[in-house]
Image: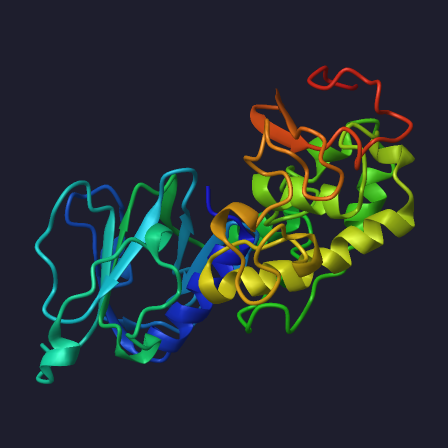
Length: 316
């Protein structure tokens, strides 16, 4: 499932490509209703909060997109690609024509999830977008979007139509909620109404970087620790927007490549490294399922007053 870094990256890229331009919007297989209300209108702004995107085409005309676990965008240059598979939605610039420059004419049809950020196609040269697999793609009213924002927790990358991180959210409400519950901090960081945008990778890595036992009840996590996690999340998630690689290891902790981009297998401390030695202490990284997702942690670096708590047992 895409985490907040990817959602904000798409929002910034789509702003650069399409905001201020008249757009054609269609749902070739009819899976998205009311696209005719958006077709032929100017895209005014692109909103992002947590794992949600909002494409504003005017009052009560917000295209809401939640990618869920399997949703993804493709993008390309004119001409439009042939309709294939379950194409949920397609948008393209009105008046866009096939490129004359052959270097620009080749249609780029690469899934964002396999894009490492090295595309030579600048956002302003993208002509069309296609959406497949999203858990929601529907036209919302302004009130529906406002209700969503009220329900979600603060976003480390901000919750405006501006570049990510330029208008950071206030983390205070999240800290207050965490302080009132005995749920494990590893569960709370994944709840979008507590903090929006943090997913399984950032959850595991932020807890490791803080050396916090994942099973520590929320009401026992020091406020200073919560502040450090929040502060740590902002540059990590902003960096993850650049090349879509979530890199959380510090250069000094990487076994081999201590300068430049790390090797893929050295990008994370614990996420999907179960059974392998911790880069810092050498202890085997563990994993377990909790609240429907897989948790990864180091039992030594993240030991604490709750190290003997049975991981995987829900704490009420």
